[in-house]
Image: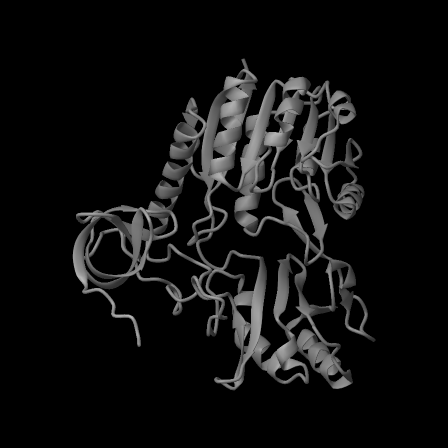
Length: 439
């Protein structure tokens, strides 16, 4: 017997979360309503009870907020890729800036002396990297390619994606038809895709080996749309070009204003929003302010996205990265750009050794761009290095705030400036940058 749903209710939305849920506070528990915005009066239906709040579905907007806009995607609300398409872009930025400042104050107990103006770029068609799910759905009799549905494991039935670069977002139907034509159509669960300035590449995860006809179909698809095709049968080390087909040209992207080109593979981490990445790098140089006397340590340096532009201004740059293959490719990027005053080393920054900490002393500027977990393991090392300025780029405001509190309260730094970067418009991701100066 189906569970009876509670009766619909009406309430005023008093706040909006960064993941696009409106907050109502009727008598009793707070209710989080997907798709509602601050200031709106809505009808909703509770669908899930939790200890301190309930979750609800939006049934009707009785009074609309002035910031509400028409979503740009036909499957918004179903697809889990975006959560803020119903909110005007300027308001999205305000909200993300507010989340950053709230986290700094509430978690880190710090406030920046200066709030940096948000960095933004294109709101649509910006995403140059994606991992797409693929699934042959027996009931539909066809393959679906796209992102997962919101809060569900199913692949969204979508014809296009508006936030993906058009070279990816406009190809979902063709990708689905390609996989559907293969003998292993139900054994291709994922496609990893990337767009460079010089082309597109895709890695098809194959749980069974494709036959000769399958490989021919994949090759024709790549030739038709100018896409380099790779297969992945197991882990990342198993990625290889199609059998009998020449390896595609490596992807690369340019950093505007620096005449620097970064080569990368489909599975490498790169910033997904090219325009915002360029603006972020320019601001990083302005805040860090290296000159030819500067020795700069770039922690979590990856392919050299920050290291190489910094090296055009600094005397010496040393990049530290965990993955040995990334260290190797970063070195090749330095060579291809004829930048000789930068070097890259491999080290696990989650467990920095005392010897490494001693070796890193003497750097007067530190740049770090850690993963979502933050850089707490590096705090003791940063204290020993004693750099005059630390520039922290973050993809999680909570861990940035935690680390900021330690830098200020324990290590004696001042939080000079902080602000957000809209690397992922239409989504709940909050990317930010903070500058610390030794007191």
